[in-house]
Amino acid sequence: MRLFFGFTLFVSLFMMMACQPSRPGSNSNIALNWDASDKLIHGSTAAESSRFGLAMMIVRGEKWSTCSATIIGRRLILTAAHCLSHLQESPARLVLWRNPLTRDASGASQPSNADGLMEPIAEIVRHVRHPLFRDGDTQNGYDLAVGYTDRDFPADMAPVALAPKNWLALPILKFYFVGAGSKHPNPMMDQTAQTLQQGDVTGETTVTRASYMGWMGDAFSHSPLNPGDRLVSATESLQRTFICKGDSGGALVQRNDDGSSMQVGILVTTFMRKFEGQPVCYGSAMTSVPVSAHADWIQKTMLDLSNYSKAETR
Image (cartoon, rainbow, N blue to C red; front, side, top):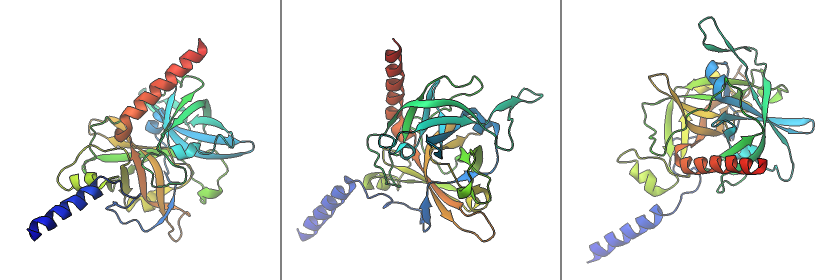
């Protein structure tokens, strides 16, 4: 009888824990011992980044800061919610920039500015942040926002495909990152518009679950991601190839063997380490909000923003 009572008590306690969301970062299966920042970027331009990647300049008078975004519709972008914080208290223009594209002899698209010269193409006139996002929480699994622009994007730019709800973060998948950044030797001192760049993420990308139930489920099999979950990419290669400034809101993209691409995450936090003789903030790991976990919210918000704009023009 005592054994049965003890077993029943254990099961009850476990179920109570399983139904409670964990504190941010409490279930991470990667040991991250470094200072957190929201800045990271690779050092080379590419046609892929120029087709759907955007730099977002937040302009307040003569001051500005930079984030990243991706095109998900004719006038719609996806970015990190924390990039759009405090806009009600301190209004700002949200100007989108891109690397211009040219065609080579074969007709393929190539970046026309290896030096990172960029051009403004649109402004965000309306945006919606996820209702569960909280300012100041760098480990928040709801750090995403959708924006609507004042004009259509240029014809040589196209939306990136978004991961569906049933997407699985399998260990065999290959990822790369697209976002805005700087080639300045000390990126935090760079006062110019950043370059859109991309680079491979060659290390392991794992899932940090928002609940004990999801974490326990992964012990037996992979399952689709849930709201609040996060993707953590940690790799030695980031220490050598990434420098920082303006990467928040950029895209973690799945690279398939057939050459196709699909956005699976939105970068929200970068972990930095300092290395002797290298720029001030090479990266060691980065955290992304999984797109698949919020597929329904993203689709609904895209539709709401589009319909609101149509109603305004009538």
